[in-house]
Image (cartoon, rainbow, N blue to C red; front, side):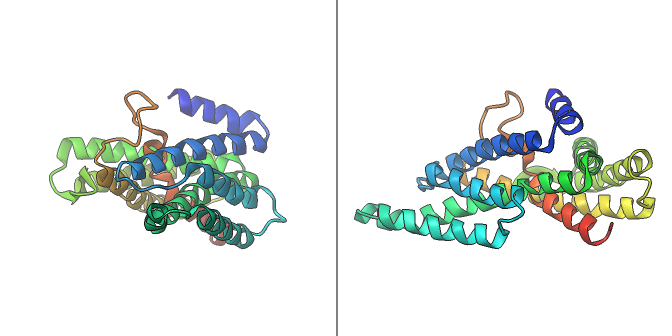
Length: 258
């Protein structure tokens, strides 16, 4: 709850650059957690390389003159160059494929997706982010409630043992209700049917995004990405459902809500 209040204050009463900086802090912490998961399986992604790569991707979102394609090329080129220079022993050469793959993937997986929230803010304003967060958080609450009360059939036993089809249905229902409520209060220019449809698909995407992150945790043999947030796990655990949902929502409003 405290984090939601801070997020609201930042979005509502500070310049966009403050929100951008908050996102970069989130990206660094989540990326550190992601590399920590990989390290549990003795892979060797390089945090000292991954963070600059993540910032290079972020720069493409912040500076309009820097094309995203150029930033992604820079990520591939710099990571290849750094790992090539570092490959000075047989052990490092053997670890090269997994190390560079996880380093680059982590930077793209977290930085590329999270920064879409900044694009939504500067192009559409904070009300669209309120809609987004309302749909995601209400959907998550509905999924938890329905899963707790009526959950019987497992969705993905290996990735997310506690998630059920009943919980998924409850999440979609609450997401649709949240979308219609947010449309009524904040986005009257958007039809309620469009809002409901967006809420349905937006939370469906979030429900895919969540287990993907869970697969990394299961592979690492841990329940949470870290314990930085007592009782809530890590930052990556808190944003996992947003990672695919943020780009999806951006393109929905970009192509369908113009």
